[in-house]
Image 1 (cartoon, rainbow, N blue to C red):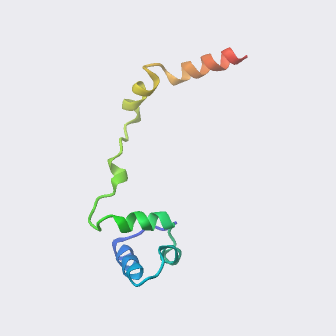
Image 2 (spheres, rainbow, N blue to C red):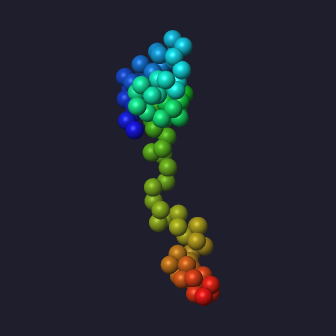
Image 3 (cartoon, helix red, strand yellow):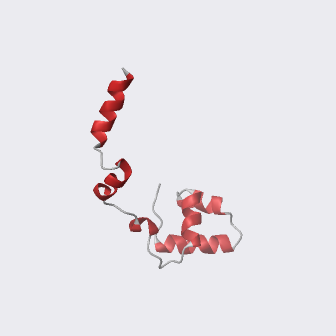
Length: 82
């Protein structure tokens, strides 16, 4: 799948405004329909919301595992199943 640049989003918006379906525009641009719908809903100058996600998995792991090591808990479950 290709990425959508600013010019492509503007072109897509113009095509949709002229009654071309989002599905047809997405096919012509070589992107997924959901990607095009997402980009058309957002302002052109809006930052990509995906970059705001937490990227530090080490900081999240203790909250998810309750402070236990993932390796130890998986090993205990595997040994108990034998």
